[in-house]
Length: 551
Image (cartoon, rainbow, N blue to C red; front, side):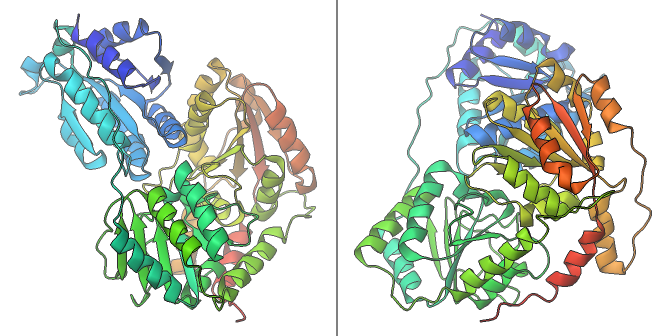
């Protein structure tokens, strides 16, 4: 069989069932081979960046890599932002690109560039297939590495002449391995340190949204009562209704969760990625006692001096801690006031505008209150990047892990619309809502056609302010003013209709919840536009500088 046929068989053996992308001349053989596959679905997108975001969300929700595909040159460069986003957000992904014939790669040639070198900084592994006999090993390695903690993107390049060559080899049978676990001695040290604390707190990171880890974490806090503050990407690791849930940390300003950390005498970090929220923001003096538990050793940083480091499978680590908590319970004099007061104060903020009845513009707090009332515990919210992301991080909380997806490593705009499409291919039975700024939405607006063509049941809510709102917010904070960041928009409702979507506009906050329910219940893609009141940005900044916990 041809090498392109072998590549498809190897992908099938690995359980790859979706590939998103835009094909080109240089991967035509692969596309012909893929067309004959019974188990892999190819989703034709309108831009390679959209394909990468779809594959990222598919991987984040399933734990299984999806493929994203582009051709050589501009097809590959169009992929790279979405690939970098997935890799830094720890999403398993397989990146597949075509390339010119191998006998012209060493010289100046049409559309030829060193794609592998370009992808190496934003992937866990990247390589070109130079011999078709190597394909089974290379696919096995790429998929295995993409799944291995911490997950990420791996890239394979297949030159067009190599794709046509005959090969006699066969796929390698995938064999899963159990992740290593920490030994008892280090767990004994960690537990002894946790028991010795008086006011501990847990900072839960991205690693805690793995299903097994979240389950064990919930058992741990039920046994110990220790409060949990999550990063943007760890929302839902503890149920928002649990008294130990302190909601989310990550705003670059003083807030109630960061005050709770300031009052703690021990910080236990679980699955924590520095790329999300740097420790200098919650440990500015570098003097906090830290117990670090994660799949891999911690990054070295002067603000992150670890007292006890536990490296190994996080779910198993938490299971071992639960065994110790059962046999040797925490002291009765644990002081949880710092965590309970932080939860109480932030809960009041979240509820403050639940009954707003404004016309003309809608406050972010009200919009997110209504979103939470409309979406069920398993329904999915995806956030794009912009000022709305900061409001979602602070005001939208979750019952279950992986029910709010926020890009917070690479933080690329344009994520949410294609990401919602990717989520539809994972589970179309639950409600899927993407919230975008008007700037981020238009960055991948072409994928509206993809959503309509595949009859996806998704809803996009646009917060319209006709400006780069987050940049304005940050410039105002730093300089007391901002540069010209305004722009014009199309009539979004008419744009929705032009793409075959159902369009809605809501300008009165008291009507938002009803309008949102209607949009979500519409069969097929729908778009809801609201004029957002970003005057609240500076009001929040002013308040955050003065928050206190009345201990």
